[in-house]
Image (tube, rainbow, N blue to C red):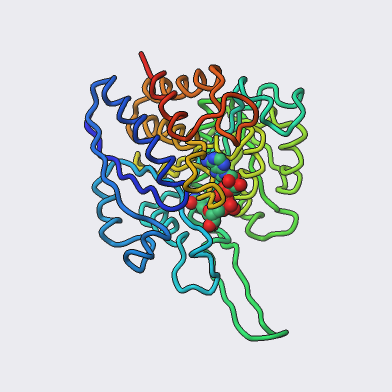
Length: 356
Ligand code: NAD
């Protein structure tokens, strides 16, 4: 197959981990006889420095010519002034809006070889395999926001605004994903307090009725969900939730797997186009040292193969290569004790294990 992939490495460790993701895709192309073309451009802080904006129109157009985007991470102390007129994250938000990528999929699966890396007690970790579907283009991060005044009168607000159609499409997508898994959907909201959550809950129930599905639905309040994720993580299958709640819960859930450096994500919409990126940020504290864990990006590349290119077998081969790399004892520093290797050595170990 022929595919065109936009590569946006971004800031901090972004370029280091993205490089390894691309090597993995190149190896897959070579092994399975595909023709992948890569087009690279800047996003985030480096793009602000170079062009005054975190995402230029040219980069957006380049992405439109592609089948999928592989992204590293954006941001860093240099661009973190909250009063700055442009910020790196605006590049990400613009990409999500431009391609209507309304659902962010974040799978959390514990590798049997990394149980010791999780801060959770071993007996709680059996069978942890969950998928968080976070609504990505609505809610608190996109509703009306305002800031005014000075001194004690200074005030600001953000608005958690949801339309029924926004809830409907993400719940439908999450339900379809649950069908292909264990058939259990948890919708997370704050319906005891928030009007937008009561809408979320009503629409979710209606969509599930209309879909006449075997998938079982439960509702959980977000505070209770935060607790249950630590108390009984293996009970969850698919979680669907609003933008803000999903942002927070997925960082918490990442600890089940042991490290942020392991968690991939896919941002998708109605079609096959998607943006694939590790859940972690640009990790300025370790940037440039060659020690970042590239596995989250490599696993994001596997999601790209699966969702945007329809290459399920190839995606599985990559995931298996990651598992056997971990089984062989390779560890970046964030994964705790083991055979410590650099970003590049970890990437190479995975590439060497990609075979049919
Ligand atoms: P972070 O995820 O960058 O780092 C948190 C901690 O995890 C750090 O100690 C870091 O060293 C470690 N870590 C993260 N990824 C790792 C990896 N692959 N290998 C090994 N260790 C890893 O979060 P932060 O420190 O809160 O944010 C740093 C910057 O990243 C900020 O500017 C923030 O705005 C940005 N950020 C960007 C994204 C994104 O691009 N999607 C997401 C989150 C944060």
